[in-house]
Image (cartoon, rainbow, N blue to C red; front, top):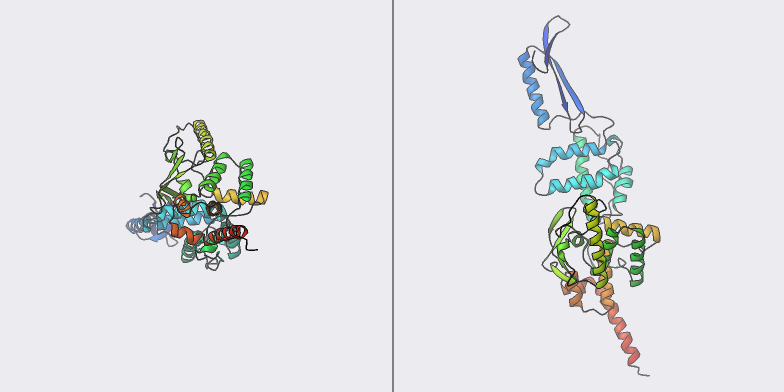
Length: 380
């Protein structure tokens, strides 16, 4: 008798051979494959060897279970495809699975997935926290998962292909329209965040509003980038769902001044970070990321967006995106008469881009200037 192979007598009293092979599928569930009616142990062994090779190479079709969840299936799909993806794609898709698919719809049974469920529980909820381009990418990846399930005869058809995605608007000056706060609205926002959120989120919203830096630039800040002695912040990195890397353009690499108020807030926050790390037995380092959670892990990439949504829901603060805080900084600076070259340097863009992006704000500034002159130069 060989391992996994046994013999028996058929109905004609003839000796036959069979194999019984137990293995674990991609979901961690124990499976069993059996096959009978071999005329010799050698025939049975050859067939068993072929089966083992198929299982090891991921070619064994999953025995579909009606209770299989979407989370289980996307893990199977990822394991099958990851060796074929290049560069950072495996890491990107793993993030899509863990950050979006599993939390939002992973618990639902794959067999029960419908267009309406997918629309309400995934696409519509993502629309509140993610950009249309990002949602398009997440959707395309998930479409691949579902198409694979159809090919494996697990699903009869792809029911989510025609889901309604948010429109990807062409980038123009209209992006700024409405997506910013007035000084009074900004003051109210900061007050609400301070009294309702932890110090990490309050400091994050404060630095975005006070410097106009991009959300990814704030996420990539390390304590070594902050010069408390000279009240300077050095920006040279960005960090998002795809990882950490150098700044977007040469203009993005810059040094900006921070106010005394912001400097004091960052100093308070730094002390909190040091104390928090000690609770978890972590030694603070100047090379650590600035923004961390209460568990000392890097702060959620969506922290700023979720905070702004929460403030809108709790206090009826005008709803803007995290990038809207950048627009807020720019429009307030323009209204205060700060030179365009200075604003462009702080924001890490060219002066021509600034003038084009905020053309309406500069036009309003010119109208106010002309109004002042008309009051002075009175021809009556």
